[in-house]
Amino acid sequence: MQETELIDPTRCPLCGQSNQCAGQLERVTGIKQPPCWCNQAQFSADLLASIPVHARRKACICAACVQAGNYS
Image (cartoon, rainbow, N blue to C red; front, side, top):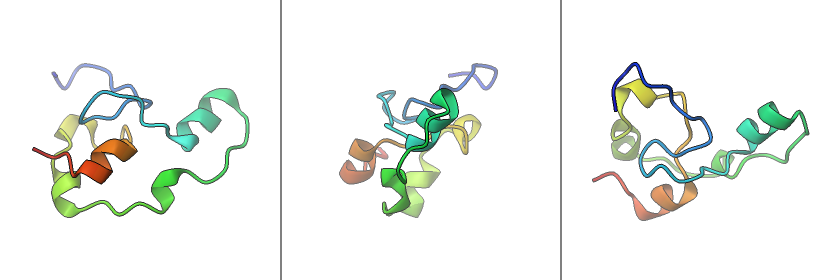
């Protein structure tokens, strides 16, 4: 993916699947959401480092990638 491509904040930057981000859902719909699952998740430094530089802080990692340690 090129840096000039737009990042979809509703998609995991590692696998491309829906990240189920409550924060994004609230932003898009304007409907208050409960705290996002990621507020309780542990993100390893290796997992965070695996996010492409151009996607960092633009889209949440999905729960499946966090659980699987999907950073290969």
